Length: 200
Ligand SMILES: [Zn+2]
Image 1 (cartoon, helix red, strand yellow):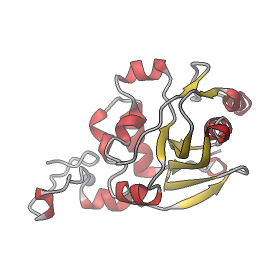
Image 2 (cartoon, protein in one colour):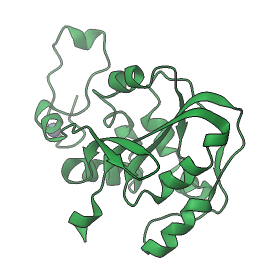
Image 3 (cartoon, protein in one colour):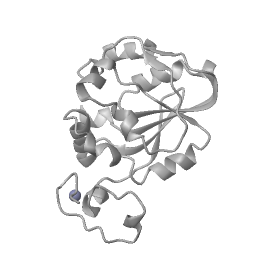
Image 4 (tube, protein in one colour):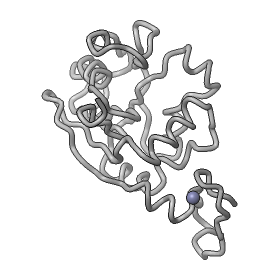
């Protein structure tokens, strides 16, 4: 097997590799993809994040999402899956939907694939009103995202909303704002945090 990032051969003689899904990154790439857990306060709620959006995480995510390299789907939650299952035990996982246009362009639903091995029950019914994406949008236009979500699923006691990258928070704020009347407890997580003050 070869590392999906650096293409080096990965030795696979370990005892556990017979039973567990193997890491598709080599040990040195995995080490660079450091998990750095933090809570980002967005005012009305906190978001738990796990990676910085830069370096190897950014490379892998762009390759996965923009170059449609579906083989990378399992590298992002490797080593995190168990934590998420424990920390959000009893919560329904509600993924931020991709727009129909993006789904069609990629040929897969990127977030659904990334979280596919996480053993939490799913919640469905979150939809975007308008089919536009954030990429290349100016900050003030992103504010529109706030009113861009509807939820038409059932009432659920505990929901955890999940996304891949937290930037301005407008997507998550939009999704969060339509949830309180549909759930007693709403938590939010995002795999990575892109600190815009460092990037502009
Ligand atoms: Zn590697």
